[in-house]
Image (cartoon, rainbow, N blue to C red; front, side):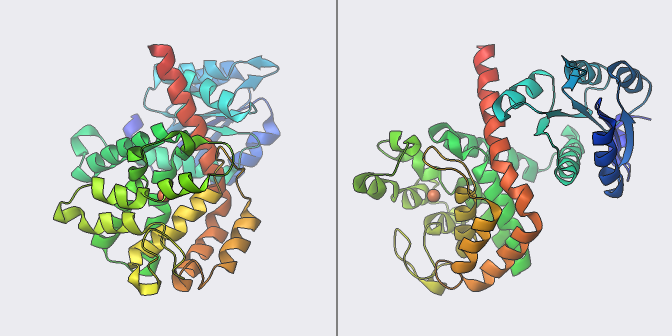
Length: 353
Ligand SMILES: [Fe+2]
């Protein structure tokens, strides 16, 4: 069976490889319940034979087998025999080393042990979805996505701690906006704004304080407050970008009028802008920055519940809190993984120079 047919199967085949049978039995049972057809394997040689003889949509392997770093052999066999298979490494290494090791081994992603099966299932499904877009099927929206990713990486260059911030903000905004009932056109513009909301940061006169350890001085805080308007201005004056630029300009305004730069209040802030405000704050407080540790889920929930009708609009906040209860653990794990992957990409490009 061709790999493309594998991707299109309703039950994608997944090979789980780890010398701890109990670990993959538990993960396998959860993946099975999520609709995957799972094969378990505890031996590197046997895994290599299976990859050679059979077709898998995804191969998920541990790094260490009986004390030896042999996970790379499994992924190397997959990369050689089935280049388009989704490869994921499960690693007990600290986050950065794990990401670098995984990418060197040809993995598209890595997960730190103990692996959450639900996050693994979501990671595989997301990768399989991306695989389904073949070059001849690329539509304009896919190219917009690629360009959006480049804008996000430009912002990450001046503030590395924001790795993945734009894309996560976009995803969460879309989920809220759909439940809020915004029309498709507005949601598309909100997504563009979410990707580019911090674009103005790259035009600040002094970029050093973006990565400063410790609180900003009053002058630095005043300077950073220019970034919403700067971003809206620099993104262009084209009429088709007018709405997206408005949301960018509003992303630090607050429902009770305590935000910046214009201290807009209540419904003077657009509906899309109100959504972006909530999500931007969530992703910032749940992400490690140079000056702070990320908040845990309980602290996030307590904070947002306390801000209903204050910093944030109650209706938007209710939808957001519902999603946070549902996806909170996955959302809180995302920033560290995105940061590690961005650092691994930088290390890899440095090695290639
Ligand atoms: Fe911002």
